[in-house]
Length: 105
Image (cartoon, rainbow, N blue to C red; front, side):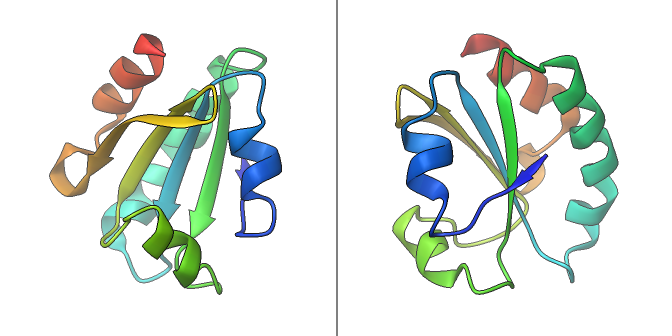
C-alpha cells in the first residue's frame, strides 16, 4: 500500500486512472492497527484494478484530513474519477464493508 501525504494526494488520488481506496489510520488507534494487515492483504487482490493507499493522520497530514473531513479513525474513503464516492467511519470500517464498497467502484 502506498503512503499518501498532502503533497502526493492530487497525483496519486485525484489524477489516478483507476479507483482509489484510502485507509486513514493512526499509530495510537488499536482498531486501525488490527485491521491494517487485512487491508494490505485485500489490496493485493485488487492489484491493477484498484489502488489502495494509506494516510497516517499523526504524521503531518492534519490539513489533508481536515480538507477531506476525516475527523476520526479508522476511516476509509473511496475515490473514482478524482471524486470521493463513499466513506466508512468508525464501526463501519470492517474488511467486509471495505470489500463491498471497493467492488462497487
